[in-house]
Length: 372
Ligand SMILES: Cc1ncc(COP(=O)(O)O)c(C=O)c1O
Image (cartoon, rainbow, N blue to C red; front, side, top):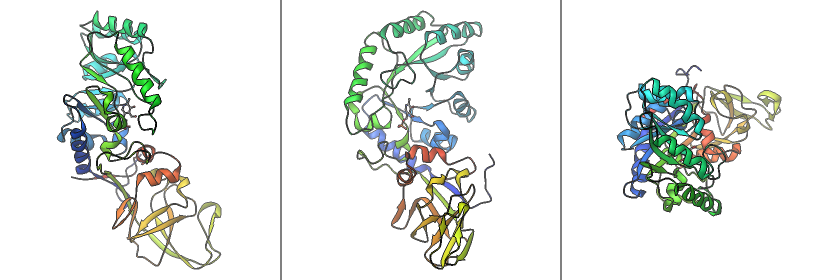
C-alpha cells in the first residue's frame, strides 16, 4: 500500500512515551528479570524499526516478534539483541532463522527432528524456546511425556540446538478474577518440574501478568501493549503506574460546506440534516483502519467533540461542525486537544473491539511521524 505523505492524516508516535513506559516497567520488575519489547505487527501499528530502536535506547534486553520476516527486518536494521519469534514455523525455515540468530518457539518433536538434519548439514545452530500449552490451546506441548521427548532431543543434539528458553502464555492475566490464570500457572509449574536443568530463559508474563501477577515469576517479560502506554485490561483493572499512550491519530478538515435541512450526507443516505448544518470532510476512512462502524462516534475539532455523520467512506469521513471552520483546521481522532481527549480505548469501545485491534488496524497508508 502506498503511504499517503501528501495528505494531512498522520499517526504521531511519541518515542519518548515508549521510553518512559519501559523505564516505568523496569522499576516494577524483580532483580534478574529481563525486558523483551514485543514489536510484532509493526510494533502494534507504531512502526517496527523506530520503536525497536527507541526500546533499545531505553534498555530492553531483547525483542519478540510474531513472524520470521519481522525478525529479519530487525536484523537488517542492524539490531543485534536477542530476537524471539513467538509463532511456530516449518522446519525448512530452521536454517534461515539460525543463520540470522533468530530464536524460535517450538511445539513439536517433528519440527526438531526435521530441522536437525537441515541444521546439521549446514553447520548451523538454532536457539529454541519450548512453548507449553497450559490453557490457550494455541501452540505448545501439553503433556510431560511430549515435553520430555523434546527436551531429550534438544539435549542430545547440542551442535544443532541451543535449548534457550521455555514459556507459556496466559489467556486471562488481564481479567478481574484469577481462577483460570492460577490453573494455567499450576499446569506450567507441573510441566516445568520435568525439565532439569532449566534453560536460561523461563517466561510467562505479557504486560498484564507483569502488572497484576508479579508472583508468576520468570526471568523474562514479554512486554507489549503497555510499552505503547495502554491498559491490557481495557478498563477492568487499574494500571499500577502512569503509562502514557504513545500514538495519536490526527488529520485536518479538507472541505467545509453547508448542508440545508432535508439534505443528506454520505453513502446510503443514512444521515439527513434537520436544519442548516456545517459539515467538514476529513481525509481518512476504512482503508486507513477507521472502521465503518465508527459512524456516529466523535472526533475532536477545534477543541470540541464532533460527530461523524453519514457512512464512513473508504477514504473520507464527514463530521458535523458546531460552526463554520476553515479548511486546514486540525482534527484529532485519537489523542488530546486541550483538556479533551479521545483514547484508543474509547474508539475500541465504540467499535466493539479492543484497543490492540484499533492500533494494529491503522493501515500502511497512514504515515507514521515520530517525536523524540
Ligand atoms: C506469546 C505472547 N507473549 C506476549 C505478548 C504481548 O502481550 P501484551 O501486548 O498483552 O503485553 C503476546 C501478544 O499477543 C503474545 O502472543
